[in-house]
Image 1 (cartoon, each protein chain N blue to C red):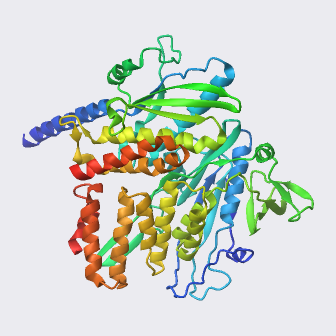
Image 2: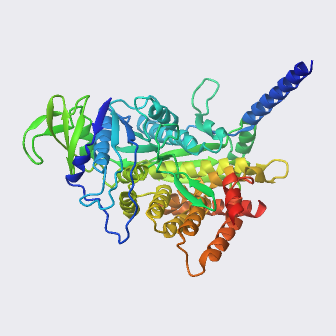
Image 3: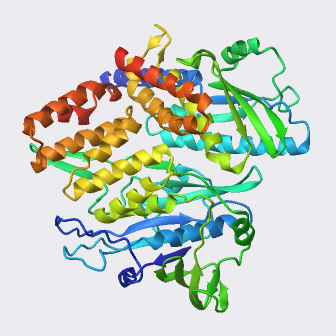
Length: 362
Length: 229
């Protein structure tokens, strides 16, 4: 098992994701917990699955940041992030297997990224899956859960989905040829040109990153691994995973930026587009802004989902809690809540306790 | 004395629950029965067909795990190959009108038939899924899916088969055998499955506009659930 540890200071190298330009000031987020991503190699022919997974995990690692940079006026501390990388694929390619791997005491991961490279129709398509296991992982904050306090009650909303896949990546023929070799992940002495010092072996520690380049130590050598574009069409995998990790770490500005890129990607398929809207809206709400526009867009794409309706309702509850009300005031928001429940109540079980509690405060 | 009687009652109750659970399991339709497609007599065509079978089989197994938070019966969702007495994967050779009898007697969720065709740029597949009485609001019991077997079609191939499977699962979940109407007690599970189908159907309709009628059927069924429940 390999471990990629990212020192907090490494964030400063080339990260351009700081989106701290908003005019308001949010309270400081201090996340006491470490957020861990477990990243087994992808299954697939030759060394292709392992090498593709390594490139994707290094790209994900580039998105980790412990605090906003270059300025951190609110004194945020999103806590440590860690990628635990495994040179072997999951024994069975299944969400339950991924959850079991995450729960191992030497892993305790909040996210598992796993997948497989398929030979199909004369090419190779890589299918990645994300599993967000729910279990007692000894964290204190659980920042991914959206909580709203209102009228002496606490209303909680969980992440949109805990088991899902992202769009496949169709690999270029050159990528397939090159990265099927076990020694394909070369460690270079320089960003361009230079000497090949060795290749990534069975153990690796990543130390710093630049755009499209990760500095690693492996097999007694230290240098840069170049991170190529893998597919003909840009995959949303890295941005989705980055956005979710940022939500778990309480980096809500960073999450808004990541999910905006997911939504700007024309290749993002509808189920993930809906998730991205829900996550982005929720991140905005956690920053003290309304996420209702995003929830309404998600509702337009998925008008029959209990999850979407929960987010819409919670947005109204949050507006009541914040006192951030439209011209019609609290009465208008309460009327809207009643109308939503009346219209969409059929999506819930007849005795759904969450919905009953919402009805109870109206 | 009283505790012994209580134990007997508890044992009888346990047995009744176990029998009911077994009966429920026996009734669940969670398998797609796949006949060997026509046009697979030579090695390249069979190779293309096996790649196609692999990606949709893997997808349906994963799909089951993606939606099982609500219903453990879907955990058993899978594709099984229909074999003859010699154990060979068999093609469907009878008249298509015999399919309803097959569906009723063998208990699948749906039946997959089809044909592989050689084209100038590779192979293409016509996949027909038969849903029998689970057609719900679809205009017919067959849904035909035409696709090239090409890497760019990977997502569409998997999503199109997933949508039809999810729709059949939803109808199976919601149908009330007693009244031939909708069983509102399972509306949360049924609407969840329909929504999962609806989300994916939007991408499928964009890639394969001739399958727009499936998305329409999903929306129609959801409206029926809303009105009934």
